[in-house]
Length: 78
Image (cartoon, rainbow, N blue to C red):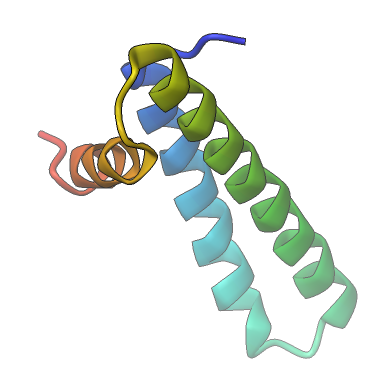
């Protein structure tokens, strides 16, 4: 499935948010909540990685370059 650059950025944002939630729960005593959050982050991150790979192949560019640009776009929002 083709993804636009903007869709990749949104996917990365969602993965980053899920990671922050998992990190926040890591120090809590609620192990089931942490494990659920960790799995959600893992699934979202895996989705991002796959989408970046497909996008790079479709665009005929290097995957690492696409990933770098996506992460830059996420970090530098207005």
